[in-house]
Length: 214
Image 1 (tube, rainbow, N blue to C red):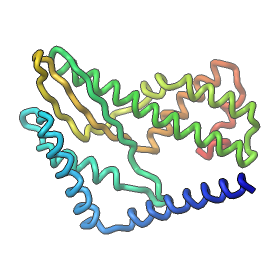
Image 2 (image 1 turned 90 degrees about the vertical axis):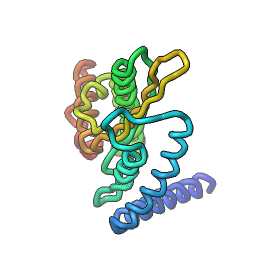
Image 3 (image 1 turned 135 degrees about the vertical axis):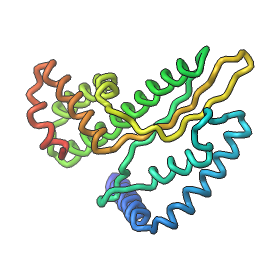
Image 4 (image 1 turned 120 degrees about the vertical axis):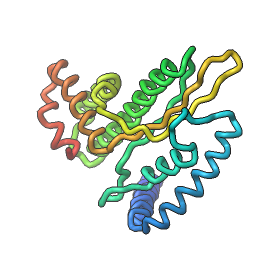
């Protein structure tokens, strides 16, 4: 009975999240703008107090954050986010070096989020008896082994926010926030996982589209 109650609660939670996403997707552009702007002002004020600023010619922090929040509030027709967002910070002797490293770290962050999403999909196929536990284990191993490949397969990301501050030792610390289309992210992941399965001689790569609903 405990298992049934737990499963029912989880199902209800998923339904509630889906309903909230759909309601947000239906919200007017004006409502979303107001919500994003309010959140952006609050975070911009906090970042400015911490010494963060934008590079010459870049948009003000508040405007960059406004764009970031607006993209976070965009959902597809099924109620799923249209973009995966990731951010990272890095310190370097100069601005360009710190920015390049932050970008690579942000891409790794994206790859990690994609891994988590696919692992959840694999677990769901087992729960629905579409996949045996042995098959799921093989795919999960490939998912976990493919983080670097997924990161390398990620195409051109959308820079959403870029700020920096100068530390006491004169080094530059850069904070980047990037976005990537969710559909493109899953395609990049599929490519990387299929490659790993093929290299390990697993026939599952031929059924991956069907198994995971891609």
